[in-house]
Every structure is written in C-alpha cells, then in structure tokens.
Amino acid sequence: MNTKMILTDLDHTLLHSDGSLSDRTIQVLKECQNRGIFVVIATARYWIGAESYIEAIQPNYEITTDGTLIHQNGNQVYSYNLDVQKANQIVKNLLEYSPQTEITVASGRTVYWNSQHISESKKLHKAVYNDYSIPLECQVNKIVAELSDENIAAEIARKNHCRLQCYRNDNWYAFLPENSGKIQAIRELVNLLNISLNDVVSFGDDINDIEMLQICGIGVAVANAVEKAKIAADCVTISNDDDGVADWIEKNILADSK
Image 1 (cartoon, rainbow, N blue to C red):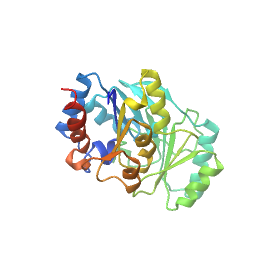
Image 2: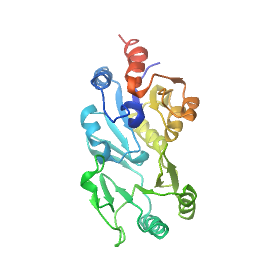
Image 3: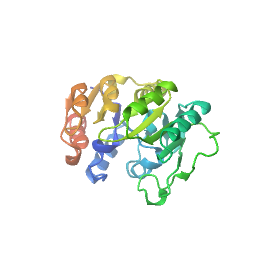
Image 4: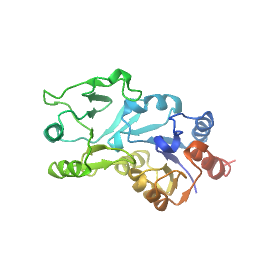
C-alpha cells in the first residue's frame, strides 16, 4: 500500500485514557511527515478542545468539531454550518426541555457555553460565556447539550432536520448539519490534496469513527474500541494506552518504507 495520509481520532485512540500523548506517538507521526505522508487528526472535539494536541503533533490538517471544520495551521479551509434560524430553534428546544441544561455552540474556532465554570474546564477554558438569551447571529457548526433522555435528543433532531451524534458512555448529544460528519470532511480533504481514499489509513475507536474506518484504504481500530468499530475495521491494533496507533504505523508503514 502506498500510504499518503494517516488519519486518526484523538480520544481513546491516539491519546491515552488519561488524555496524555506519548513522546513515541509524536515521534512516529513526525517520521511519517518526514517521509511525505500527511498526518491528519479527525476528532469530535472543538478546535479549542484539541488545540494543545494540535500544538504537540503539528498535523498537516485538523478535522475537528465532528467533521464540520477543517483547519491547516490554524487557518480554516472548510466549514459546514447549520442554518442560523435552525441553530437558534435547537437551542430554544433544548432550553424548553431543560432550562438548566449546559449547551455549547461552536462557530468556527469560537465556542459559546452557558456554564458558570468555564475557567475550570481543561478542554474548554477558552470558551465564551453565553446564556443564549439573545439569538445567535453567527454561523454554527455544532451544538452540544447534556440530556438525560436520548429520546428527547432524537425528537429535537427530528424536528429540526439535523444530524444527531451520540458518544460512547456519555449523556452529551451533538446536533450537526444534515449530511455532515467526519467522512464528508475527509472526502473534501482528499479531493483538495488530489489523493485517493485508498491511500489513506484511518484509526478510530467509537461509533462516529465507523464510516471513517470503512471508507479509507485501511481502517484500524484500537483494542479498546467499541465492538461495532472493531467489526467495521480491517484490522485491530493494541490499545490506546499501549500506543496502538504508533505501534501499527511502525510495523506496517515505517518498516515497509525503509
């Protein structure tokens, strides 16, 4: 296989379970770049939530916010948005269901949040406070809310004709533009770079990684992935805590290209 791109999720895939990133992983990804292979992260995280890892990895491109944004060196090259009117209606529906629910709204690299504890958040301490008493006027890539009932989330998504994204072992739900997701961003990026999906190796662990694992030339799940992701993948590497991504790359890409 002529690998031209490494595409990897962050949480529970490239990162250890405690959120750390090993020196080994950074070095392996850097060696891929030295050999002309694009390194791309593809994460559900907001850009500001991934920023520290972007600084450490220095990827060629960053797909963030569940595939609704692509940045290159911090510069936006792709954005897929919810209609502003629809975004405001989703926020209104969420607050009607639970006035105290925490809601985050991504608009490019800016994240709005109605939490009183923004400064205490490791991921989103750069968020901007917004109680949503005034309608949003900006483009919106993604809305996330904490809900106790998945059926309520599904109903809000249905009413507003948007995509609902759930996450493993979590009660946070994301509302995204219809037909958005990691694979749409990946297709945009490979077209931009004029490379084939067959030349891409992807790594993931969760439900929202399944399509990514399926459409790329080789899809690799880490050992700690959910079972559905393992089934969708072409192969399974060792766990994220054992540097599964770096280990697979060393054995199957770097060793072959020496």
